[in-house]
Image (cartoon, rainbow, N blue to C red):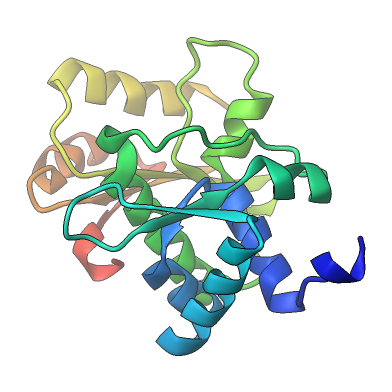
Length: 204
């Protein structure tokens, strides 16, 4: 890497964080790396100016989103795909997933987080359901993380939860639910001891 492209430790951490999650807003950078707003904006501005990041408006009147350019993905030889555009229908959901990740890393600092993007890359069967992330404590102790904000059809929700009971990869499944879906998820979880249910609002 030439002198022009030397990156600080903080910048490298930010870029690898974005590689895992695809995109985020400035608030997630501040929370994840415990930066002041001015410091976070300074780093992001530098990375945008060097054409390592795209800074795009996804939702009107909301903070802009950041994601990696092809240039920096190639330069750092990152292994997850470039973001061509951010789908609006998953935008808020993904921000919640990132916020859950940040809070869980504070509680379990030694656990490894496996992102959905990385799970998707390793996926072998297109019909397999993927969690929103995995909290990896050890090979024999992995927790699937699910963020539920909007109601699913009863059969679909129950099917996913039963499917988790038949697999051997995840020891537990942690659902982080909005107020609207908490009762339904809790109802099914009562008969599924491997599922734990949390209030999403307490973590985001």
